[in-house]
Length: 260
Image (cartoon, rainbow, N blue to C red; front, side):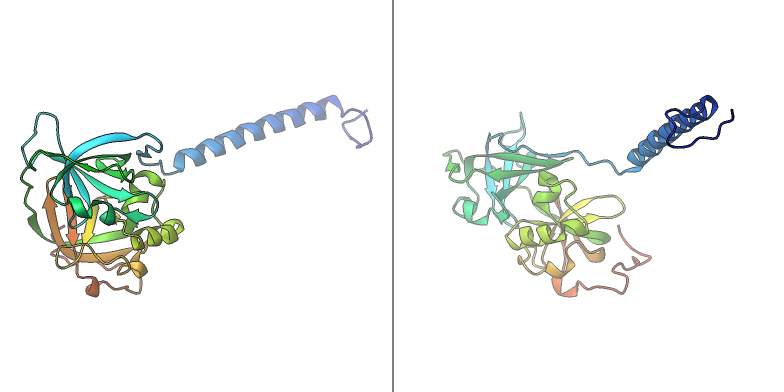
């Protein structure tokens, strides 16, 4: 009897069955190895989080411009204006916090909210109705320092999703969501492609950019030229929105004398 096998027979010949078992085991090992290689090759998610449902209490000074921010004195540094932690503020949903904090600009307050964070950047989603003024006098605010002109290639994202509410919170797949968030008043962030550095975008006057002024550039790789501003731990990129433009390949080569 040879190893010829017909499908209606109850068992395959011993030699053929052993050969098939070895092939199946080998294919199984190859499948596992390919799966592990694909998983290893994937870009890891950045450490970011949205503490949904975990309400914390914060005390600090409200800074309304260019974007709503809470200045919280670091432990042991109360009264030292250049030693504050800076938390961007947003409202629930796809809304900025301008309306919630307008009456408290420059005042020391207490509020409740949920933390959003990505690496060293932090944000608070304010619980509506939780802001209450405190009687203590505000500490002096740190000055804004002009660090000079820079040229950066990257992408405009909405800060709320990018910092932790969505992961990933950038790229083409996130474009529609980012456009709605920025349109609703969420501060826009420019993220550089090469180093992943983050800059809050402000207009030529150093103030917040209009909610729809950046719509056509969101989630598009573009090169931006502007002024780098530093205020404590926050970095701002001051740009003239009228000078933003698309190039044939979306990205321009930076000039040889770039300062960045």
